[in-house]
Image (cartoon, rainbow, N blue to C red):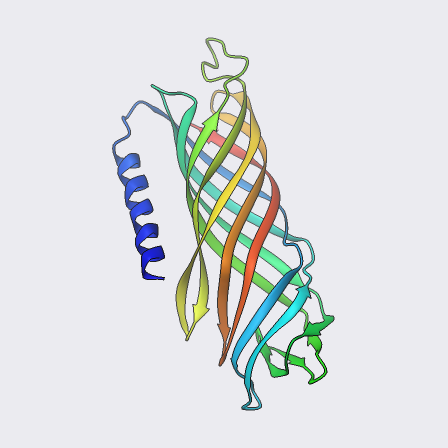
Length: 238
């Protein structure tokens, strides 16, 4: 865990220094976006002490979520010297509804999940309540684009397919304080410049957090979060 945190801070420092060293002559952009987000079925581990005082250490299999939504903002720039290369900082919020469902558990549990009662019987019948899973995170990224239909008015291209990737951090609750969860983010899309200062874009993004943990009272839940999102937005260019 200590090594992972060290690597995380090193990445932040490197990207921060890269940003600070960027020459003033750069194409800046500020993006706002929103869209749909989906998490495939996932196994959820639970450990700790239930509300009945019994110790718990089990896995609830194949938990489903409904399609949720994501919104966010992104601040970035493209280098004039290398117009295909850019950097950005993306800040996002994902909200995933978990419907009430009956699944299979590998042990017994009586407790709470995001303030709602959850139980797994001794025979492995898991009763999961309807809850909403919020996720707030950020990602410093490297971007690559392909300038198409370039001219004097649009030297970087009116149409710009692009890809991006980088580390990502999300916030969760542990022992009544906020903790950071480390993961990654990657995706691609295409933007179309309406004017030199305004563009529309659409993109696909994959955000993942292996071993994402959050705590509800004396129970800790853990799952591999893999989020698939399709978003559209407006980009302001400077």
